[in-house]
Amino acid sequence: MKYLIYKNPVFQVDIEPAGGRTKVTAGGILSPVLKNLVTQEMAFFDHEKYIAELTEMSENSEITEIIENSESHKNVNTNTNTNTNTNTNTNTNKNANTSFESYYRKYGDSLIYSTWMPPIPSPAFKRMVEGRMKSALGKYRPEQVTISITEECPNRCLHCALPNKNNHSKLTVAETKDAIDQAVGAGATNIIFDGGEPLGYAGLEELISYVDPNKAIACMFTSGVGLTAEKAKSLKEAGLYSVSVSIDSPIEEKHDYMRGVPGVFNTATAAIQNALAAGLLVNIYVVLAPHNVNDLDKVYDFAKTLGVHELSFYEIVPTGRWLDNTTDILTPEQHEIFRNFVDICNQDLTGPKLFSGPLVIDEFGCMAGRQWMHITPEGNILPCSCVPISYGNVKTGKDAVKKAWKKIRAEPAYNKGAGCLMRDPEFREKYGDRFQ
Image (tube, rainbow, N blue to C red; front, side, top):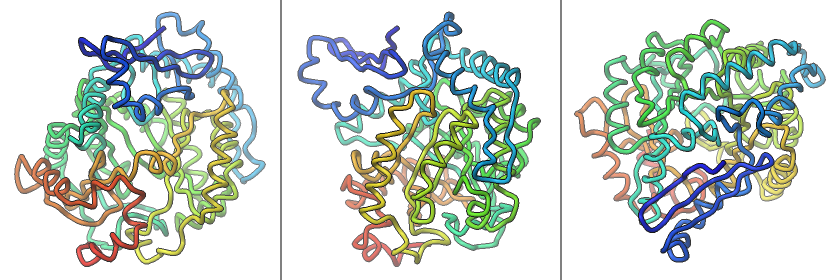
């Protein structure tokens, strides 16, 4: 079955799942001309693993078989690399898969391509594609907006993007709703709640349910602390689209060291299981750094064993508490290790889909101020969560986000399309006195 990505009177792009991978095709009178403008975007979707195809007959579809094969790995004990027992039984796996399909089929016949984007097709996905078509012409808008609703967090992560302010800042429910309205009004199609630790925020479900699924998906970043079975069900009922749980290492001691608190690896693992059991889309989010680049195979096995839907990597950034650690980044040799790892894992159709942040940035450039925007617990508007330069505050008026975006887009730095700005010595030299 083909799913529509984009269509106008003279040009159409479709995506078709087949054998666990995608095939993207273009048609229409002006296809030979227009597809050259979006070749890069089309390649992003083409010949890639995907999460699920949800149709009335999906129980008998090939991708469902792939998912069930992946689910069967949950019976393997991940105790090889940790002290945590993550055994589950076959009935639980089946129920989780059924719950997943029934929850997301509310979007109609669709392809779940990634935890990072709306189903294909859907009204929110259509908005996202329209935005990307405009960005191909240089008219960027903030597609993905992260909102740090609270600074409060039980962890003390060494690489946290939030600096050590210790002023317990948080946005009120009303302020956050206003920020959501402003972000969606500016073009956002992915609203991500993070912190601090968002699970400790009273009113989280109210905020999730406030995001209109016809315009954007509501997602969440979490360390896993507080994601009980009951909480996972509550978030699902509120309309949460996907949850990303941060894992610094599949080895308990290494993860807990980076998090600054003993026992949080076990908590994160349980959180992943609870989210899966509730039928949510689950992504494991890994900050790729010198301390874990040699554990990539173990990370993948850990994710596959648990049965998560996606495994995402972003490279460590010298920002927040890590602001002065400009030399503790990946070397060219370590980048090559990661590339080889991605090539190998992409051949495995029974494992999770990979989102390879460093490779995406290599291809498309830094997304800060081009497709990303971040709002801090104080309400400050940043180009992304890693660039600590404020261009406005959501509390100053209904047009604060649009005004801030206009200021950001006026800065030449956000138009280079190069690598991560915070790892760029020239950017840090030029803008460092504006870092908060």
